[in-house]
Length: 434
Image (cartoon, rainbow, N blue to C red; front, side, top):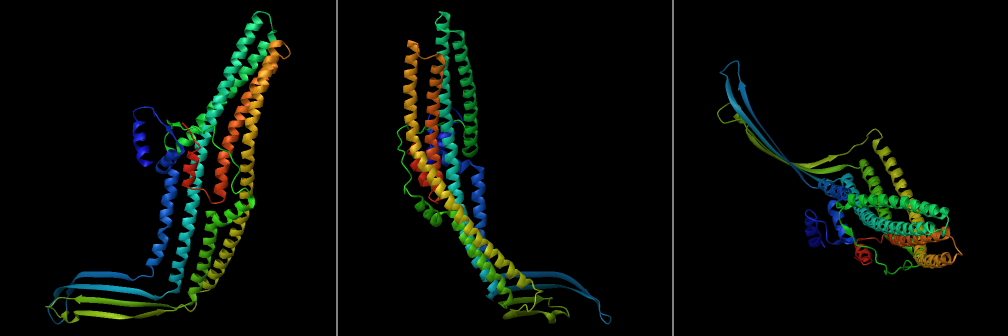
């Protein structure tokens, strides 16, 4: 996919694109060009460094220091002299028992899991965001096409009415009625042109390309009810797979680690400490006897016996935060239950609504044909014909909208259950034609 998209992007600099951009290609462009997604990815990478930072606190630290100074000594009973003094020191510290650092490291691992789950949620949102923007353009294109066809049909009706009026077959009111219907249709067409421009701008803001022709939704793609066809199954999937809920559960584990981290404030810390120091005051002065190499190694124990109540209150705070994170899990579970059920019912209704709208479109076309026939023999008037004409195109718009509602709400249902991924982009791409 990448090898196809990049040359195509280069060609757009010289000519209008000769290919139709499908959903998979639009998604690839979004991953490369969308600043919002780039910010999300960089934030994810930044958060992932916390575990390494916390682990580093458990590893040895090595420090080096040095000094160089020029000294002048002026004794009362002898001549003054100058000398250069140098000192070098190497220090090593290795934590041996640091319950606070260990639990902070465990917390960072839980927070890494939170970050992973949040990033997975953002990936789902990106798939939904790109798909919704893409199909909104297709929806606007179909709606505009129907509006233009309606306007053209009503214009023909006006021309026919004018000819009939010119030969005295109908009254002037019929011509005025036809003109009024045409004017209303023209206004609707202008609104749909604005809607299409807005939809294209929204997609361009994501993929960084506003000149491409998009692959259209196939007329023969199969509309089926959601599978599994049971809302309880979708609720179960949401509770098991939704990354937002997974993040909340990992956050609870991190809150438990925070409690243990704060409780470690009551415990001692034990470090291994070693150093090597070298003092060099030169060899030709009275200070040279201070020249020495010094090596030390030992165990350092520190124990805070009283910290003004800070540790106790920090533990209380951590417990409250842990309880809040537990409540957050319950809140998200309830939200997902409602969302999964509602999304299932909506997607399920959409699958049946598409069939109903398609039949309504056929019925409207049949009604228009019958109305025109009645008008030709004088049993129906021009108003009946105009309304029947507009009903046909309203039915076509409703049918188109029902198909796009089905597509978008099916995507939202999968997202609610944590089942939306780049694999779905490939499946949705199969619903598109040229």
